[in-house]
Amino acid sequence: MAEFLDSYSNKSTRRMYRRGLELFCKWYGKDVDTILKERKDDLTPRPNERFVDTKQRASRYEKLLEKFHGSLLEQGYKINTARTACLGIMQLFRYYSMNITLRAGSPVSQTVVATNDFILQPEHVRAMFHVAKDLRSKLLVSMGNDLGWRISDILSIKREELPNLEQDPPIEWIRITKKEKIVGKSCLSKTTVTLLKEYLSTFPTENPFLFHNNAKGHIDEETVTARLRDLARDAGIELGNMKLRWHCFRKMIISQAKNSGIDPDIIKLMVGKSVKKDMLTYMTE
Image (cartoon, rainbow, N blue to C red; front, side, top):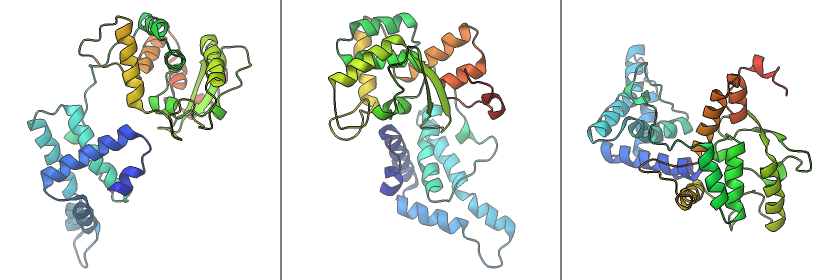
């Protein structure tokens, strides 16, 4: 399990898969090594075995996964949480080339639209920006306002990747997204460019990451989330029981772009969502 988890650089992903595996092992009453041996045995053909028997044995863990998913729902877990818990065992099998293929209509694949994210608005972003007292917080908020990229794409930015900041803003920036490995094409505003120049000159470091930590890596998602919540509190923004996280910037940009009548393919390109290749060729400016 350690080898599998270590293959993921994102701490949140590792924690999510670990939690799912722990829940499955507790429910099934067997450890990860035993589970992997069983899965390997299920997928190994027997001499003179009928094809249907081989298929039925190979689908055993799919049926177990559905039972596990059902038990989580009975315990009060929400649909999205139950599905997330199943991803651990599914990705473990995938890592060791023993994939599970869910049947059409499997309850494990069902999700619902999350409704507990705070609906971030431009006025909230302005308020958070102006109460930020430190340079890094201001830069994070400004980049969140410019780029609808995922948190993994923001945290993985290295200083050497930044576009030429001596250009007149807005400065176009094209980058391959970390999660989906597709093109994200957006712009850095005048405010962000000014902050970047000051930030880079104020915090010289051998660490290659833009938002670096005290070691050789970058700050984690939890640090950013905690900072955003602190800024919201300082700005007098009432979150209630809603969640404020980096993804709220992404949702805000997509929503504002739709309300402004921007072409859907351009919106996708801006935030690093997949665009059909035959259309991508013509989107040059």
